[in-house]
Image (cartoon, rainbow, N blue to C red; front, side, top):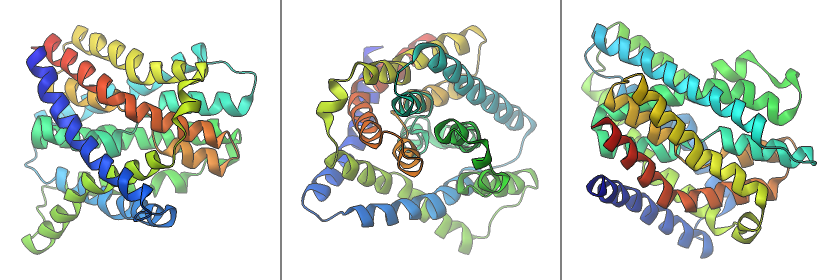
Length: 309
């Protein structure tokens, strides 16, 4: 387990070096709020679909299709179990705080933080299954998550779900995969180059938001500790033993653990801002959980690797 822990820690530290560069750029004014929002749009609307398309450019097989369905089932169950636990454990007199605390515990940064780590540790297979996890994560976040944070079912829109860039990318990529269509070189190479941006650019964005965060408020808030404990420790541990019990394929298992042990989603702050929830708490949760994940993610992934070995 020690060897696994050291290897994973090194990969996580690589990501945190990139985050550190974003932090410095934020402190020195090289990266601004406006610039980070534009970079986020580039990642969401250009890089993410390219990641999905590039990941699915592989030979079709029935076994691979079965693994896609298993990954989708694991992702969905993990998120729904988290929804149940957060509703059971997290309670706050202030509705605004409660919604933010629950959202941060349920939804991880499985796109920005997990995909780079999945590719580094597991290669193209990890990247491939990680894309499936992100697709179902987006479906649930833009349906249940949107209604939960807003408190208004009218916010639920088929258009928002269907035309989410993560979903559009996966649907298009899946069609190419099922139809066994390989992109020509002149298109595949630009898609590959753009997908490679999914590691450095999101890390710079996270670093910028860390440079603007108030860590003191997160580390002195009992509710925040509960939320981060669910997100960073409880859910990954439950997921590890459940998937081991049902003998889930090792690569799929590690992929899902990386995704489920990631810190709170940056979308927590986006939704909190949009629906007038506790914005300061949302920023603190995202920032503090990201900082703590440098220790918790390697432990969770190393534990999963040791159990599945």
